[in-house]
Length: 238
Image (cartoon, rainbow, N blue to C red):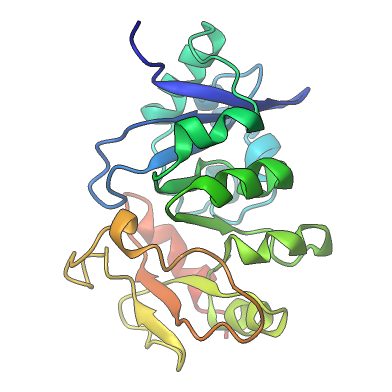
């Protein structure tokens, strides 16, 4: 029998967490992609009606907030949701993670907020993997502080950068091309401005903070995508 193309990791009354096993995304490289999708509404419809808040919370980059989100939900998120609705993803429990994810690199949150992945699941996946990446806009909320060791604080301006650092997070900051790097930042090596000298699969610097003394640099990237122009006002908050 052919191996599944993905697995259902978690369901609640409102969301589903799904891992797909391959991607042709040139920036990330061939990482396992973990999606957080609405359980009962097509992602395209969710974005159109603002009901994507069930998986994206109050993210300032949501289309409903006039943000610059680069995810094209009518492509991969919609396809993953359709396959999920059709029952094509078998359920996978924590005991099966080693057999499926061992030696793989994992991207937590290809779409949707990775803090919606129950911590025991995220932790178990990270434990058997060969590295991971992940980002959250929910870094201000104390109930998600335990995700700090796995996820980067996604920040959109210097004020948020300073606030997140004060709370102990490593950060991933979107910026405009004319904004300088902060003292502890480096350019994302998988970006255009970084010369595409790596991929997320190879780099894996965006893997949270290994304690308050983590010496690794924070990461910054020039905002990109079709809606990049929407980002300018948000980025200017000092």
